[in-house]
Image (cartoon, rainbow, N blue to C red; front, side):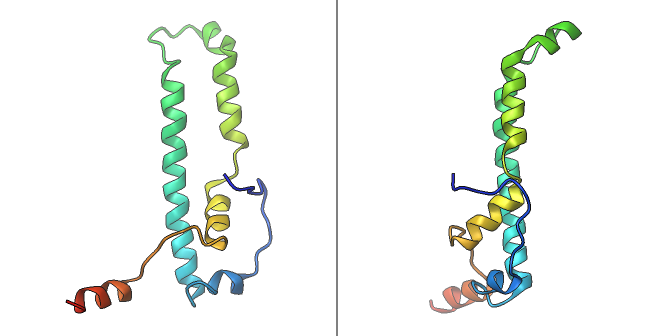
Length: 109
């Protein structure tokens, strides 16, 4: 994973618009990518925490599981999905296509 700042960084909006020519299109792409990242991270976390799932609701046992706490802390320290998506977009690691691209492809046949 690229070095992504965990906190908010001021961005120049016109830099985001360079790739698409439209600030709103860029923000839409970043938003969709952030949602994809959030879903992936949540699935990873849930699968790792599923190993610790118990049917017994023993409160003492829940607080004593250090490994589970460490996994949770690791995911809490990860950069937010929005920050990750912005970094990917700026580094041109996000693949996207527009409706215009699809129309040109379909009309080429």
